[in-house]
Amino acid sequence: MDAVVLLFGMLDLLFFLLVTGWAMHVSMSRREAISIQRANVAMASVISIDLKGTIVSVNAEVARMFGYDASEVVGHNVKMLMTDKDSPSHDGYIKRYLDTGDPRIIGKGRLVYGRKKNGDPFPVELAVSPQYGADGSILFFNGHMRDATARQWAEAVGVK
Figure 1 (spheres, one colour):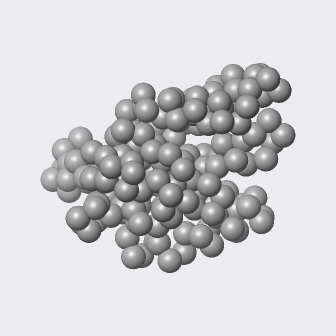
Figure 2 (tube, rainbow, N blue to C red):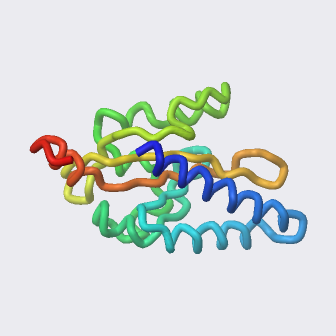
């Protein structure tokens, strides 16, 4: 999983360098459109949230993984995709990171549990990275996710 996190981090850095090279000449809406287009070609589910936890964009893979259409999640808090264990604390996690810069999950991968549209929980490999503006401020966060159900099953039965 660390290799996946490193790969996503490198892709985010590369994209950041490309975008900030244009930052003085490209409007915010254009940069956001570029980011959304990049997310749509990703093999993993990619969800972007604003600094309050509101989903601002999702890629097409989110529908398969969670069972929601984009129109059902965009504009809602990302907590709707989390189990009851994590959802009550999520807004506090964002606030703490913005206040302190302490990256407890930012830049690291970890296993969490998501909640499908039908309410079923499922294991998710999650990597979170901030998306920065030209001035260095955080614009939003990207969550890169993969369904870990098959991996957990394989580990449970001893498949390598």
